[in-house]
Figure 1: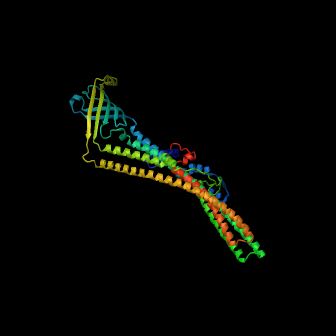
Figure 2: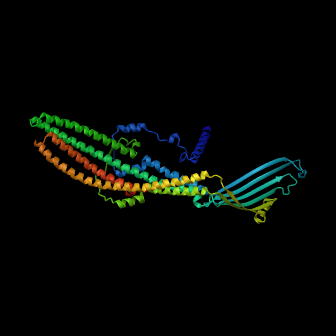
Figure 3: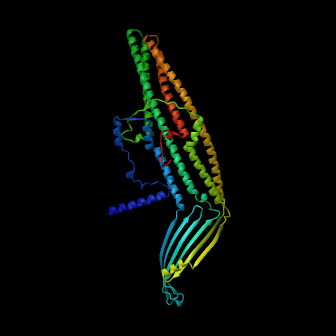
Length: 525
């Protein structure tokens, strides 16, 4: 029984603390406090077991993109921001929500009688109050109050004519600011800014997704390049080993010197070292791909050998500068986010300019009064409308010194000027960034074509030189040089293809077209 009571108390304390933290804006809470049992635990044993197992993971570019969208930590963190801004919009919107109020009180008073007319040495009075109210603030700054006051008084005093006495009043009061606090934008400023921040956060989220997906693709291509580099290193090592085998045969027949044999042997060792270096680069690129796709969090896959399903290929695409610039200004999330920031600056200037005005409020109220020995009689008098009261008034308040308001207004104007300069700078930056990426696409394609021609020529040349080497017309040193030139041309050709593909990816990022090109739709952003 005690345990159940303790659990209930803990749950109530948890809910209270969660509400307090959320209200203070300290932490976003979904479903209450996260206790120690809910915190992810590092399963060391599972990771140790998988470290000893030989697992293989076959994935393509589309798989990496999907895993990043689902698991990448940067995306998950940024995804929460629009939800926080949604909460801020609700908070600011609540300022215009109507409120109902109910007040009830019972008071019992015993006093020495101040007059003999009361008939008693002590006067006993019991007063009950029940009031009902409704109030609402409108976007124009108008405040509406509807109040219904009810009092019931019973006393042992002989001079109280009605005993008990029911006294009620229905009253409506309207207050309208005419200067400070007047206007829709002024009163909705915080709400409009919160709404723009929500839209801006959605664009920031899109920008983060584009950035991560661009990095995912670049890491995928980097791993692909290091794999091809490793394959070329393997082939090169096999070639130099074959060369060494040929020298050994020639040496055995007396057709090659001891120097040739030692030279080819040293080249084998050097190419073996190059192969290990290529393997190191390949494993590092593999880990980078696992990290950005968050595969490192999976005990079964963090140590798996990744096999890429996509081959080394490219598709020629024309990059037109004018079209690319138009796309950038229409689709870049950072440009759209900057527009929302400018809107917020305009709202702040309007709000703080209005804040410098003096306070001039027009107030009017109208009420119906009632009085009776019974509640029914009291309500009848109120409903009859015979007993009325009204009030019309003006409140004027002029601060003698308004340095704070003037300072905030001047600050808001300077911040708007800063934002305008930054916005103009962003437009210039977008144009230069797009032009740079268009140039890279064009140049990288030309380099790709040149690398293809160079590689074809090196393959033909090496085939001819290898035949001459077998015939003893080319020295060991020369054939090694030809092998290195062929290996370098093969690597350069692969790199030129990947560089071209990456330049297309980077151009899509600068255009803001990454998500559209991949057919990705982000809900609520």
